[in-house]
Length: 297
Image 1 (tube, rainbow, N blue to C red):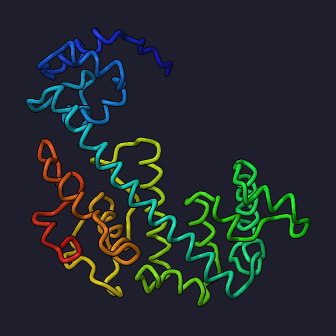
Image 2: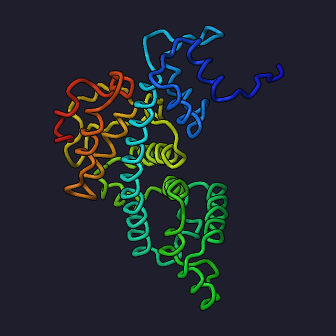
Image 3: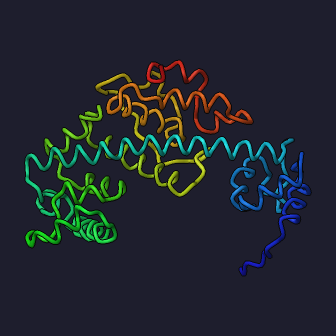
């Protein structure tokens, strides 16, 4: 089937939305928004309020363009908050992996295949790490390459410092289950390495959505495993959707309470959620009175 939908002007975009039942308080201002936020991007925010089985996608509830923009702005604030939290987790994870493994196995353990479960994945990860090293322009990498001839690869505290969080989590997942691997997970208050691997995968997925300015509101995420045996206080009510945002944010808060005591993530989240438009808390998996959980106090 050939795609035949034509490009349409901003005025025609407004008219199309009006024909579908979306109201406008100020069409001139709406045109300004559509000049900077694409019609297709906003479609992700109008979609849940439309009958998408109908070819004309009519709106099934009374809603305005201004409501959609309010939802878009809310999502942006939420996304920026999450991205800020992920930075702290990423830096701490990198530090812990480098610290525990280098103390036990030396400066270049990360390129020794004996530490990894899957040799093929290890080879691919080393290749990916080398690409990230070459792509960067860090002074300490250049200094190492100019001064040392062997090993040709920089030590782990240089190499892994420039690796992406995605590659770092894949490297950790592929490591043989040793005391060092358990110590890294234990630092984040998780006793089960398999659960910690799942958390890292979920965190990376959410972090990448935020980094690419994707929608976090009303999004189905990778299912996160909720542990019942944790070192610190976790959720008392675990009857939540594990593929929605609230479950993952609860895990983020748990980790932040350990690596960044006194962090303001929960306070900022509560403030943002107080202004959640269109009663959309449930769509993100937030249960009633979620803020009364000990982890959020």
